[in-house]
Length: 160
Image (tube, rainbow, N blue to C red; front, side, top):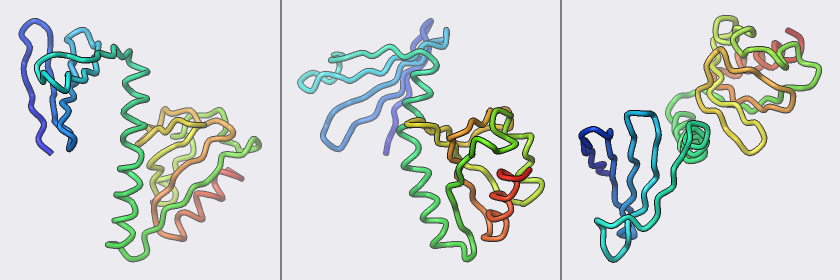
């Protein structure tokens, strides 16, 4: 897919791409941090048909919603390419010693070699969460590693 990037002097940057149906969609990133999602008019590709102003949380949520299926497809492809690689969804139970604590406190990668690649919380997905991400009871984490290391992660999350 080709993405056109245009500097907007004094404003910021615009990224634009065309869909397979012929529509043009852009994201204007302002120097202030504001982002606009722009859907251009089907009859006049230079005229904005709709503009949605996104705050930081909304932009992050949209990116996660659009990115999560791609992550899952990539994991599936990795399973086909790398023998012994597994991914599992593990719940954070109310009694977990890590419920309410930053994910880094569990030291999952250091202790097991497995990686937490996403956290599902309700309808939201946090892809590639950092160690400061606070886990909550009811979260479901997506772990990638060997079968043994993923099993070890499950033990850490339930018993510490």
